[in-house]
Amino acid sequence: MGLVSLIPQYAVGQSMDLNVMSFNVWGVDNQTSKLAEIIWAGGADIVGLQEMDDISGWALATALGFHCHQQSGNDVQVLSRYAIVGQSADNRGANIEITPGHNIWLFNSHVTPYPYQPYDLRDNPNLSEAQLIASAESTRGAQVNADLNSINNTA
Image (cartoon, rainbow, N blue to C red):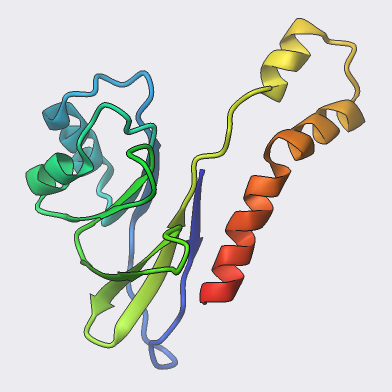
């Protein structure tokens, strides 16, 4: 899951296109060249990567000519064609300078996957919507709230 918070600093009437990709690389051929090819094909300017355990984000950034923000551990990283000029106090977010004086924050998160409600429903079709929602909230709710608090406290 990628969370993006854009802080608009352009004058009224100004705009720009920015392509942001969230990419969970689990199960993808994790050769750096293959991942770079996928990111190029997607036309991404900024990428939030998850499940990067066995892959060097720095090597991938170098292959793309991008900058890299290593979040805690090797699992979650941000790559950007624009300069990464800072990070949030808790290291969840990357401050990216799009043009001089025009920055955005990108928050990238990898939430715990299990229990996974689509599989729960597949395995037990009698589960109610309320049961599935409660399971998702108990599994990932605290992490999502922490991510949202980080965004609110940074931006």
